[in-house]
Length: 258
Image (tube, rainbow, N blue to C red; front, side, top):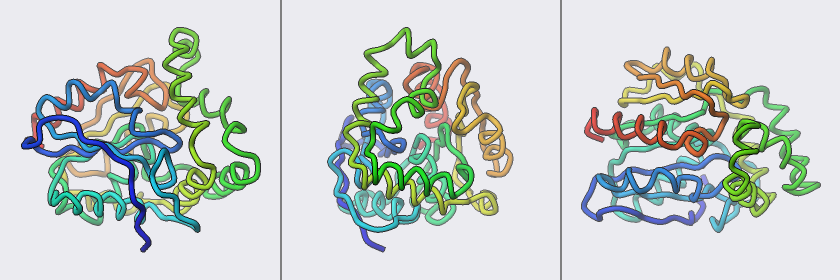
């Protein structure tokens, strides 16, 4: 497994329990900005950019979600962080789920937001990867924004939407495509029952990328998992309904001592 060097930053007290935040495909660590003031009151927050995203080191070839997990664990190890809570959105959430199956000893708590045990048919991700490699990131803009935010939010908060869209435009096509390849080969449906970490699943009622049925499946198959449904939000619920998502995250972390 080849490990990437991840761009990252810390927030919060140096002696507090660590919470690692994983971003969605095509975004950067700034997608979590709305959560930082509250989460960093009681946690040492470690945010990162996925390999080939932002200023994280890109790697050639096909990655797996297991490779992305390896990147995060190597980053944690570089700071001597043995155990931590983890929260992720979309692909960042898949990283957390994979970690929960294969490296539960590293986790004190898990939060899986707008994510899934499987993100649709593999060929769709392979086709998207090919499109981005040949035509660049702007080909995805209209389709992606329609999935990330509801139409009402796009109209009401154009500056917030543009900020996230700029992240997508800036994402290196090779890094984005490599993570599409990882999603094409990702399927944890048969292994969710192995997750023994205290888990919160967050789903959004207007998310076309990972509909509420995906959240229900996660909550049903992960032993002891708690489900929170967020109203009036699409795929990036932590941005569109920041207060609701942040409150759910804080409540879960406080309840499990993560």
